[in-house]
Image (spheres, rainbow, N blue to C red):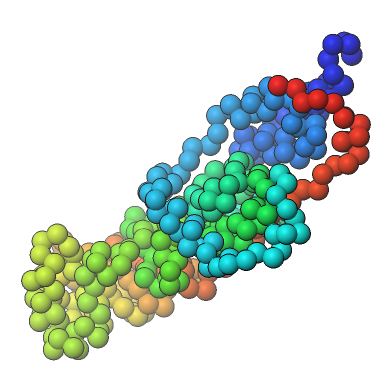
Length: 367
């Protein structure tokens, strides 16, 4: 070893090279994630001294970000992060006294293999609000591999601040990733059956958490459907009964929404569908139809009203969705995308200082 190279730098370069070689040799599609993950599995004392190697790893072309990350404005992310933090810590944080404000590093671990990562902007916004930084190893929309535990990101910051943001951030990520994963599975079923319509969510979302859940649908590859009551007019059975008839309900709604909004009507029969179409509805929802009945009714309506959009809804699950995929059905919506959807298991683990390496490599930091 040349005398002008500090021992810690030499060890760092050697171990980093080994980690990178292992990562590049992997058959995993996401080589960048492998390389960065291997880097973070090194002890911090070795990792931090070789800044050139660090910058080399991060300069490698990362996987493309999902387009949905640009859909949520920065001020919205900040507002939500502040609301979640205020809900979780409305006044004092007694546990913060135990850990103090020393700088720490925590590893975000995914413990649900083959999950779709979603919610990164919300996770990052929470930690940004408390003065921490997040380095992502996997990017938004990526499928996390088959390992039982996968290093997904690294969070750094003052210990008390990092622990303040832990639970709100994990809640967002777990919920969003669970929804995105289910959406991706549904899209895969539709693609396997050669169906070219749209799988869609519903308004059956968690109060106060709709934006995150609708965003997760985008990441998972399905349609959000309408985001709220203002997005599109949907006339359900209660609207029709309160109005007196489908025709009267559509007429009243059109007088308010004008040409700029579509009108959808929930129908329980082909006759109701025809009435809605003649009244000027743009979309007919065939609700709670059996698959065979759905196909016959959808075909009959399409033959008479070719421009009409047909949506199937009610009773559709991941297990039976394939039965509802018909060439005459344009949209299949599922409440189970958000209701009863499993979450992805994430945990955040603060790393203990390596006292042994601190003693061995007790040398000045190298720029």
